Image 1 (cartoon, rainbow, N blue to C red):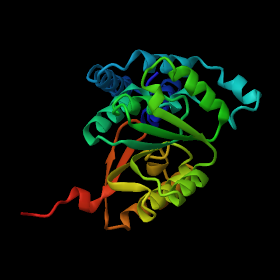
Image 2: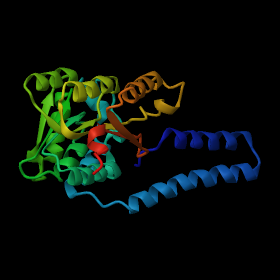
Image 3: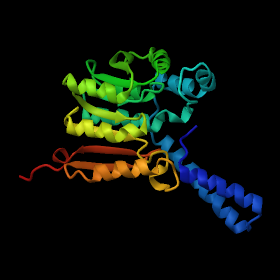
Image 4: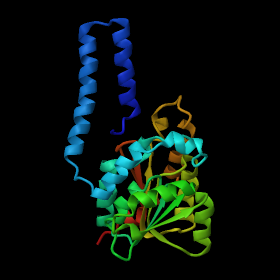
Length: 269
């Protein structure tokens, strides 16, 4: 099941409304053609992206077939998680490609979920590389480790359980550094995590911060969405910093890449 953006979901709603109200055939055909274009574009994107490893395929299957309602009923997670929360093949292969280009040694991931993103990045790390993944739920750590265990890259992943901000503050106090950060946890933490990365130098020199769900589940472009104010505050803070370079990639729910300007704009000869 591919990620479906808010505009695509709204188009589905428009088609159902048009069917119910009996609009003209020309308008209906146009709406259906637009929906089909969305689907064909997604299909082409999938065909134009390398396949994932057997273990990543297992994680994908396990994520979609896990009993999330049962997990919630047992008190193992704070709400009923959706399988579409996982990174997916397109984003996973993007992360893997970026790691292979950037060549980091240490990556900090905030938000493990079922381990798909962590393993995607770990597959491109050298043997002595490390993904440190922060996860609030012990049960998800156990589940992800079970899903990842067949991969020989799983040994590059270390999971820390606890609130993300408390953990990163501990890392800062210990003088730890990361070459890349992938933010995919609580959206309310994004702003403070970026501040810690650049103001307290948790991010190494020439490092990169990747912000997943940078459209904030559609809140960035929907003024009525509960995430709208969080999205706009985040963007305002990033744009207020002339020392940062940032770019938005319209992949899934958006990925923002943030780097220090001095690492992007080099001095002329």
